[in-house]
Image 1: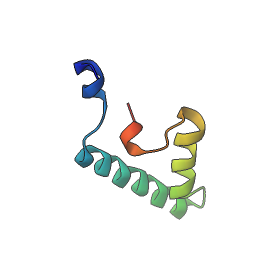
Image 2: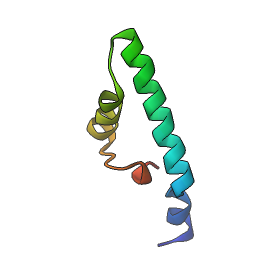
Image 3: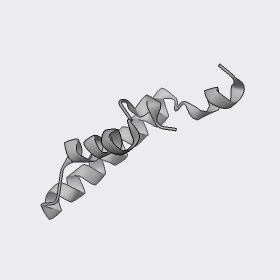
Length: 57
């Protein structure tokens, strides 16, 4: 793995922070009646093929 590629992969701490943000967005959408956590995560997968927060780049 090159140094450039290694820099793109989030650490466990960054992945946890991203997960918290996605949960917060999901809760906000749920309160508005327009979605939930699973929907936010589903859109990350559908639009970008993200299967794990570790894969966000």
